[in-house]
Length: 405
Ligand SMILES: NC(=O)c1ccc[n+]([C@@H]2O[C@H](COP(=O)([O-])OP(=O)(O)OC[C@H]3O[C@@H](n4cnc5c(N)ncnc54)[C@H](OP(=O)(O)O)[C@@H]3O)[C@@H](O)[C@H]2O)c1
Image 1: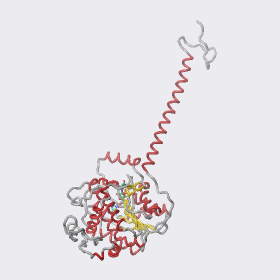
Image 2: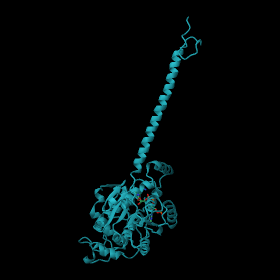
Image 3: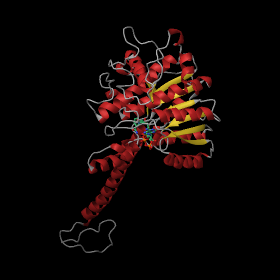
Image 4: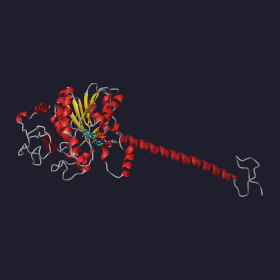
């Protein structure tokens, strides 16, 4: 029996056991080696593909940023609810651009901590800690009184503060908390500041609403959700729809004044807004972990507010709803002007402002939409009511603004 031929690569003279085919072994080894690298490269490519996809998805989730470098040195700005979350990031960016910012927060201690942090990061000393509890009409009035004593102008007002899906509680004036804070507090604040905004025109109002308005309805029969309280799909979404109807109505009132008003949805943002979430522990953990990747950062959440406050291109744009820095059309119930008119009149009564427009024919000016007397049924604690009918001559916007200052 002749000895097997020496396969290429093996030492000449090597004796192989019978049945052993050194050539096949070598080929197998080579294939095995190549197979390893093929798998390695394939897995590497898949990992790279997944990483790229995750990176792109994350970029999409974060949305576009406001990138214009325009400065607003010396412009006076009020931002509500800015000790944390979207509001804090908004103030940081405005401060970096040279604004004089009044930080309107309900907790002076948390506000001071945020103010010092922002001052440090922006190198802007023009930041002021001011107390404003939107759940108290008296607090709103006191804030405005102090602000007006300090500043003769107001260039930008950002109604950012908000509360979501809390257990049913009442504001100091007896109104449902989410409607009271998110809508009524800001309604009174804005109205009391209109004269300053007009005086400083061109000026801007930014209202931070939410896509939750899509689930909202203005419940004329139960505005305070007394009969039926749905934390999110009832009261919160109603209050965010109210933000939009308020924006729409105010934009018509402010036509040709040089004051614009726009509202926005900031996106789904990782903030403290879900602090009232009362689900099981494991769900909270899943939400917390998932939000790290799937939610916007507060900085990304602030971009639409920033564009509305800063972009010179939007100087004349008003009455719009924006998300991801772009204008979006509204659903029919968010642009229903009859609802907006009704809500405006009702809100005036609830916060105790004189009516801007005459009530519709057939409605007693001292009655609200539910047919109850103003102030009493509404739980209006300031006793101011709205039972002060004004003559038609006094109903120009200008006159009412003067009355309100
Ligand atoms: N995060 C989101 O995914 C999301 C989505 C859509 C819309 N939004 C809207 O974005 C806005 C900012 O929310 P965020 O996400 O930044 O939430 P956040 O982190 O909870 O900040 C809310 C801010 O509002 C303040 N606030 C609450 N009640 C107040 C009151 N009675 N008076 C004055 N300030 C009050 C809070 O002050 P304290 O810290 O003292 O409570 C806090 O500074 C809200 O209007 C919210 O509805 C947020």
